[in-house]
Amino acid sequence: MRVVIQRVNHAKVNIAGKTVGKIGKGFMLLVGIKNGDELSVVKKAADKIAKMRIFEDEEGKTNLSLKDVGGEILSVSQFTLMANTKKGNRPSFVDAMRPPKSKELWEDFNKELEADGFHVETGEFGADMQVDLENDGPFTIVLDL
Image (cartoon, rainbow, N blue to C red; front, side, top):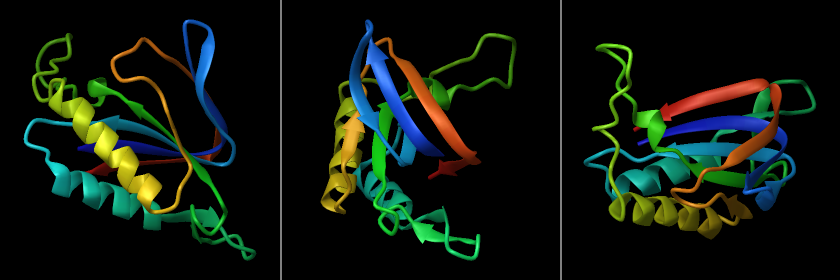
């Protein structure tokens, strides 16, 4: 599993010109599920993200978690994160888990975050989406599990 975590001031995802998910301050998550991932991996990723301290405290140190700042989450499934670019010029996506199992695990991931008390907005699995965000920092982390 690979999750790109972007600390944002705001983010939204549109499908065919219609906003389907929108948040204020929080995390924009791009989520890739790979072959072999299972519920235990999804739970570990959600727990790590829930506890990640990448917001600044009053001293300017990244000591605060998403919960500490009352942040929200926008989660977008993105199989292209699992691209293999080692050979040639055309990425291979054979490592990306195929639906319906990948969709199920992405939904489980979002449910885990909601169970941790976060407001979670999402894109639509498999849809052509346009993501608009303001990265705060910029501060971006790639979580590989």
